[in-house]
Image (tube, rainbow, N blue to C red; front, side, top):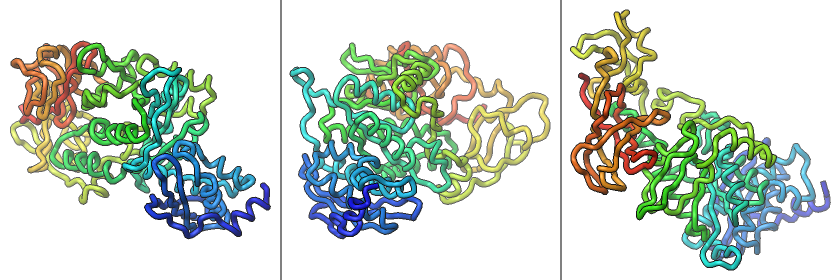
Amino acid sequence: MDTEVFEHHLTSPQGQGHVPTGAFTVTAEGGACGDTVTFSLACDGQRITDAGFTADGCGATTAAASAAVSLIVGAGLLDAARIGTGAIAAELGGLSPAKLHAAEVACDALHRALGNAAGSAGGLAGPPAEKNGSEGPVRTLVAMSGGVDSAVAALLCARDGETVAVTLELWADRENDAERSCCSSSAVAQARALAHSLGLPHFTLDLRDRFRAGVVDPFIVAYRAGETPNPCVGCNGHVRLDAMLELADRLGCATLATGHYARVDSDGATPLLRAAADPRKDQTYMLAALSAQSLARMRFPLGEHTKPHVRAIAAAAGLPVASKLDSQDLCFLAGTDRGRFLERHGGAAPRPGEIVDPDGNVLGTHPGHELFTVGQRRGLGERIAASAEPLYVLAKDAASNRVTVGPRDRLLTDSVRLRGARLHLDGGRVNRVKLRYRSESLTARLAGTPTAGRHRELMVELDRPVAGAAPGQLACLMDGDLVVGWGTIAPVSAR
């Protein structure tokens, strides 16, 4: 450590107590000393024009925040977004491992403020660069979660041209396992470090309020109503990717890239999702609600790769996440369970109720209808008397808090009713349907002759009966491996 430089920032902190006019101000907490840094910055749409801070914690935290102010004032927005923990520590002449937390919390505060600036109407980063003098923008915004897939997507984009990274903080809960979640503050810090190691500017967007209103609240309502929702579909289709496309506009990025395993077919008049080359990792089901307008600007660099190949690319590039485990699909449930989550965030714990057969005869009790899904067998055996044949959940009635069970053949259906459907092409193109994530698509057709557009209701006719079409789940309507529409599976009474 260069003690003279450190002492300068400690005794004459730059911007301490200063809040610029029109500043974007954010507070970050963390560190071994319980540090808190409130960071403020102002920009003119191109450069950081002024900055200031207040700090509560050890002296190193004050010095680190001062160093951050020194580094960013006068810097371009994208250059400021490249400043990480290491740069702040270096500005202080180096920090011991015991004091590095001070640079981390200052860096987090700085980047939260940068994210707010970039996400505002005046937070533009200027026009994108041109490639080899050709016309048209080439700057790409890439979503990074801190995992191997998004890291390799960022690496591949950076090799192709100018790339900017973004990570979304969607959820914060003390009961969550931050290491298993792709949207926690811990994941944000890991993604930022990865982006900086690749030389990329990185922005953090705090979407916790939008995520709660647009994803978590509907998830809770749907479970209370007796359905099994797909929160990731809504997050991708209406919250997360919309916010990143808005940021892409403000940063002069023509395209948005993600680490999803999917492809885009743009040969026709309407861009469509196409299944990934690796069927074991295909994620088009979770992206099915994306609009054609959004798809026109999307890139999926991993669409032609297998997961082992992606890990090999990461290992060859020396990325520290090459062998990192995949995050949990429902990020806000990481480290907790559905019942506990509904109790803490939904206002009440699931209530015990009756398990009945299709004739209404009581067979036992359950701990809450929200904890069961149509088609489920697991967990029923210990709650009901011995049966001559295995029993499955046939239906749930939220009003009576009853779960109806019966033999598997009572689940079988050769038609599935959809509500709130959307077709990108005429319904005659539909020849397959996927009724659940990670399931095989089934040969099917739509009843009638529905045209492209929105439909209050559609009926899917299956070539062979299927068991357990769960209400609330998405039905992905396909033409071969193309996604041509989607809808939500509607409830039916137990048969």
